[in-house]
Length: 315
Image (cartoon, rainbow, N blue to C red; front, side, top):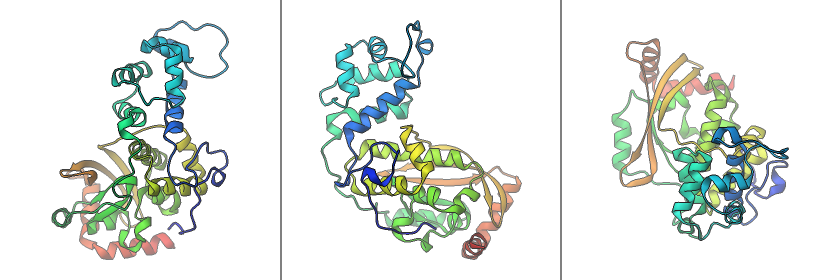
């Protein structure tokens, strides 16, 4: 389990990690916009967008003037945008830039959050962790047998059922600030053994944090989390510097559980009505599969599986 140490969020906390949260405990929105556009431009080659390649290139990817041409804006205008001066940019221009950069739906939404003034300058009404309605907790209990949990901003895990604890470890054993998928993924060695494809899990977690950073650059808890992970995990620093954005609502995952062995599961993530920042994630196995039987056994063990899992992991 990750140790709880004093947090530092200044750039000195993570050498080589690039710009990070400063002592004011928020993310620099202009720097985020600059780095996001620069990294998206760098991944495209002229041939990718139907342009002829000419001259020697000092940096990878498209030149600013090529991107401006594709988006139908002046080079000076695009340069100002990439430098983080997007305060008065129109949605139409951002849409054109998004098309030129071939952004995914999640990346396009991220660009809008970073660039539009309506998304800036407002301190979150609550930097605290989210609150789960009693009816949602009742739903988690009703889903026993199916691993399910509710998570919110910063990938904080807020509520869960006993089957989820049997599968992923007992969240109740962790301090509230450590019930967070990013901290678990990068700071808990057991996570690297649990997820058969740990790099994919790590990339998904960072991609979701990037989405949160675009929406809530002034969230001090988010800035502190990023600062802590940048200081303690080289893997996190590398992934964070890539500025990749992901929003995964469903998919497949393989686990190597210390008690149940190999599990091939499918997950679904649903937004909770009335709670726009909260999501419900559930996991299930293919009917009739060995994974379904293993999951059924874990569910029957309940709290005992959580305790036994913790003991095996420590050993």
